[in-house]
Every structure is written in C-alpha cells, then in structure tokens.
Length: 169
Image (cartoon, rainbow, N blue to C red):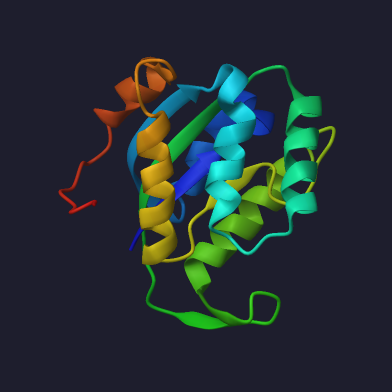
C-alpha cells in the first residue's frame, strides 16, 4: 500500500538515520524536501485538517516543533509498505495495518529522545490508509512548487531508489 510520510522539522537533522530505519519497514519511492518558511504552520494545519484531531493538539504540535528548531524544512516521503496483517486499534477505534503502525511507533519512540520539546507525533506523520493518502497527497501537491521545493541530496536519493509506477491521483 502506498502511504505518505512526513519527517517534521524537529527531526530533520536526523533524516538520514530516520530514512534508514524507515527502509526496514517500507520501500521509499520518492523523497521531497520542502522549506516551508512562513507557511510551515499552515502546512501542518492543512495536513491535520482532515484528521479527527482536536485543535489544541495541532496547536501543541506546532508550538513544540517551532521550539525544537528554527528550521521550517520537512521531508515528505512516498512509501510502499506491506499491509497483509491488521488489528483493532483501541484508541483509533478501527483496524490498522500491523507493519505500518509498528513503523510509526518505532520511529517516534526512537527519535523522540532527540527532540527537546517532544509532543506526540511531532517527529513523523504517516497516512493510515488510501483515503488519507489521497487527502495528504493533495496537500503536498499544493506546497510542492518552486517556492518551497529544495533540490538537494533528497532529490538525488530518488535516483538510488527503485521507482515503481503508481496511479497517484
């Protein structure tokens, strides 16, 4: 299954290590570096707008991400992850994919220790299903333009990853 992940600014200094850890669970199809500058806060709000998350939690995520670093860079990832098994998640009150959920838990747990103002999910955001992927991908398209996009080692990394053809709407 395709999913979209975002390494938030709070962990961007560790991106190479995080990417290696992600690759234990998923195939990275594409990396997109964005420097969102003054639009960082709106990008975060746009990403979480479709989720059923209380406004105060989004506010707290943004506050702690701003406290963690002056950087407003994020790394968006298109990933392919195995979704053969699932289980009922009591907090989400729905079925979740085992491998995807474990990846999120492991990445957040490991890198939260490096973040001075850690708050839940201010390290790594990942879509849970096809619907969320499509919604987040539309947000990414809105910001994936010359004003924000950085062509650097992350773009070069794309040439090292096996690119597959997907029908992304």
